[in-house]
Image 1 (spheres, rainbow, N blue to C red):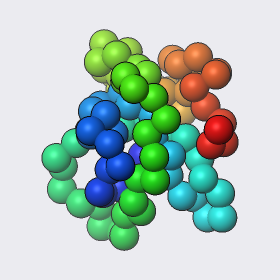
Image 2 (image 1 turned 60 degrees about the vertical axis):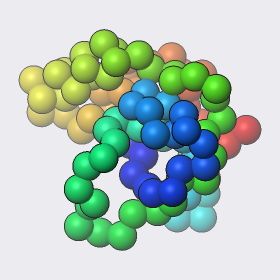
Image 3 (image 1 turned 60 degrees about the horizontal axis):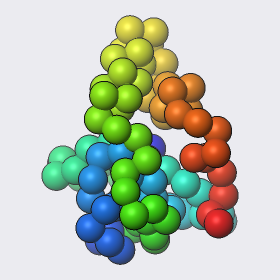
Amino acid sequence: MATGSRPPSPIARSPGARVVVPVRREELIGIVTAVDVAPPPTAARDILAAPDDEVALPAPLLALAARAARYYGAPPGLMLRRHAAAALWGNRR
């Protein structure tokens, strides 16, 4: 899941958008799950890029993944991976 501030484009502020975020020494793809929420207790990293012009995951699919995560007690990111096409994930272009 993506957490960050100062998105590079308006699409990065849309739930379901793919974004590039720094994780350790890599840049990985994440999915925006919510906007305008309280900042996390730890320092959030900035969103580096939004590789798509449209959201990658529609709201119903995000809701289904969130519901499945709650039902099965699984991490939301794992459920997003299970509900989305494999081509959406991986390293930055």
